[in-house]
Amino acid sequence: MSISKLHRRLLTALCGSLFLTILHSGTSAAAPAAPSKPKLIVLIAIDGLPQRQVLQYRDQLAPDGFNRFLERGSWFSDARYGHSFTVTGPGHATMLTGAYPHRSGIIGNEWRDLKTGEREYCTGDTSATYIGHRTNPLDGTSPKNLKVETVGDVLRRASPLSKVITVSGKDRGAILPAGKTGTAYMYMSSTGQFASSTYYMPEHPAWVHAFNARRPADRYFKQEWKALLPEAAYSRSLPDNQPWFGPAGGALPSRFGMPDDDAPGPNFYGSLLRGPFADALSLDFARAALAGEQLGQDVAPDILSISLSGHDYVNHAYSAESRLSHDHVLQLDRLLERFFHDLDTAVGKNQYVAVLTADHGFMPAVQVSAQQGLPTGRIDGAQTLANINKGLERAFGPGKWVMSYSGSSLLLDHRLLAQKGLDANSVADAARALLLVEPGFAAAYTRTEMRSGVRAADPLFSALEKSWHPDVSGDVQYALKPHWLFGARATGAVHGSPYDYDNHVPIFLYGPAWIGKGRVDRRVEVVDIAPTLAALLGVAAPVTAEGQVLPLVKPRRR
Image 1: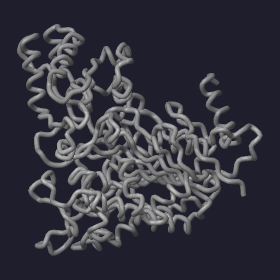
Image 2 (image 1 turned 90 degrees about the vertical axis):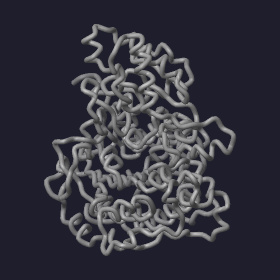
Image 3 (image 1 turned 90 degrees about the horizontal axis):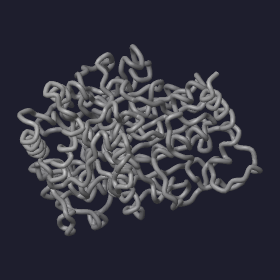
């Protein structure tokens, strides 16, 4: 047996008996014996939810939604992502692996093949197809591109009877937390149903067929998303129909389903993602999974991961400062309150641990930043690329030397470099210099610099290094200046930076038998979630995890 395998076996054995000792800061070796493991871990990821939004509207929250964590759980005031390109794929890959993109290989939602320049999708796999649904070439169907394992993979290896079930409005929000051995279910915007792929199984189980047969999405046809509170309650957010909403505008109440439509169809089902109704459907499907898979009902602990995608769509369209986003936070709060009540009934209030986080935050709309007097702007990506290539042509001769953007990097045409007999490092250095002349770019590093760490003392280098993987990323890794974004159109809002508004997210935990109540102000990172859950489950953390066990508040003695 190798030393590394022996170490992992020893860690697994030790975790089962000592996890409370490491779980709570200040706990001594003489602490009472640990309680039994949770029967169920429930991870709730809210796509695109910055920490600031939860706290800004805290006085308007229901008693038992977000407040279950804030009032009766442990929550972290300074929880961050450490990588620079804060988008959905990398965020969801980080949560249960404890590994940033430089280990997980999930450097973005999509990127380009280093040799061919062809598009790659983070959960794309043409060998697998959606069950009962059409599958396009870049659809997400498997974790093929995920280079590391999750807590669920470790758990299932240690306890084969354990189940890992994941649900999301987006394929990547389900597939990446599921790891290699869990089972992912995704919302199908063409039908309003949930489906898995042939990577996981040949056919759906009976409970999935029963759920889809009821056509639950259809009940929202021609229904309105109405504001939960009186108009005066939204004075701290911006009114409807702001200029950056675009020609279609946006206001509450908002009806789903076009006036001329006689029956639900693909346009209607897709539109549900931009509001609270697709999230309600995801939670309904999670309830069906709890019953259908009997999660948390035996001695083998299970994991249920639920990614609620609607907030990301709302914030992209209207920005996190809008009344629509404000109300959507409150809608999520009420949905969670009802789900927790059902979870208490189905599993038992003291039998599970719930964790809530987000895959990224959100940058304020450019117009909002400008009104606040902050330097801001939009980058025309195509024009920037053309400018860089013109500069490279002057230095190295004719040719499209930079093929494309890839993740958050520039990708050189290595076949062209080989044909011309040029040194890639020299061309990358020149491309980096040309990129930094363009407006809106804060930092950029070449492949050589990323590998060597020679610029490690630079303020943004660590975050960029965590977003760069040598087998997947391009040749010049970059970050934009604060409050700048890619996009020539003056509409919508985005995320994807290493700055506070994008990297500051919730990390909330609830589970009275294991977790006390209180606020923790020590800085923590999302990579810390996986080692914490592994300790709770009595298994080793994934070998590639780079976080630490969270300093949770100790539960009171009973």
